Length: 304
Length: 303
Image (cartoon, rainbow over all chains, first blue to last red; front, side, top):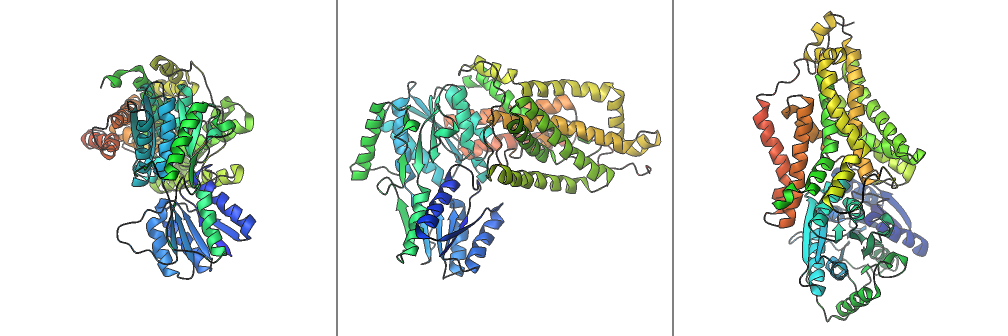
């Protein structure tokens, strides 16, 4: 079985989203004995070409990493019926039927953002916290909404300052702008800042360290990016989602349509264990863990 | 609105303006000598990369600054050789060098650091007090060696350009290369030297970006070179005014970020503001500003 992976703008080595997808396929390579090839497109035009290239060579699965693939991947999937396609963070456009060889992998980001929002609300001494978004799109606004709800759930009096770096994909790779936004929020009183902004968020960590505030990472455990400043990270298990699809195909039980992963499926979580969570006091962890259990049990609903 | 006049705001404005101002100064140096320079973006990006690689290789940020300056100077010199010496259209050469910088840095990131997006972190300079008070931030910003070098470049450029024999030759090459050549000024050589100065000054902007973020990030120049070019034009190719235009742009950028936090207007509108202001000012200034008359011309009588 052969799998082709097409990366998002950040590409391999982003220590986040793309690396996580790659880790899922490495695991598939080890445990399922599949072969994996990958392409890093340099621009929008290359994305569709890269997917076609894999499909034309008769690959069994082609994975597009990122919402940016959402429309192109359906076009290619319709053209190559014998190849299966999967899109991480698939953003369906209205009334477009999904082909039977396509799986859209989506996450309930609002659940994870809610948990780290609760962490921020409990950790804040100034009763003000910040959110820095990358590109202003519905996917990233889901992080913001979940985060704000989480903050207010534990701290109704807390203010949430939020801002976005831009409206184009470049907004995910402008750390200087991320630093400027976080600096502005911290000087307006925020003492915990969460980002959903790709490598723009690395600038958020710079600002938080310089100004003695705390930061919360996203997508993967980002503690190592700024030890002592990053108190936890909202973790999105892209690796789990990608691995599961590969496994379904290997075991002949692929099903098309939207696959949703949240806290219950362990597709979403937050760093609450080990040395990377040592800055979180035990009572904060206990409180947030109990919120997580409520969400998993279905007693607490989080609206996207 | 009270947040607009705080020390934090001033510090942020200065910090944001440095890459723009350095690139604009680089544009002035090049275009005053008669070479259209749209490769400023590539100069920023490649010098940021050069600074990070030199810092990682040597462990010293000072060597990093030298590395960044070297790479920026070489790229700019290459642009000069292509357009002034070999008479390639300067727009074509500029686009080619921007593409070279974007893909070359990505290629080397992959080759040396096994990543398509960012380098390992570097220490950079870390001078001045820590803390979140406005005064501490301003002190940190102003004590940054790269910022100081940039301010020095802004201060020295007008003097060299308008008060020295070399500056006169640069301007002569830019105003009327044929006449300059006829009185014995080696136009191509003067332009190449001006392009080297341009590259070195512009590199400070790239180095600032990289040191500020303590790493190289693929595409981290983010169009700043082009905004700087707009600043050069609306400043009428005058160095101090170009730097001031960049300071104003940075202030608008910082204001935009502040206003986003107050949620009175949709963020898309606010993010447009600095660019919209640039367009408006450009439209108003375009009629008055006079480009160097020999911009893009060659000294055809030179052998």
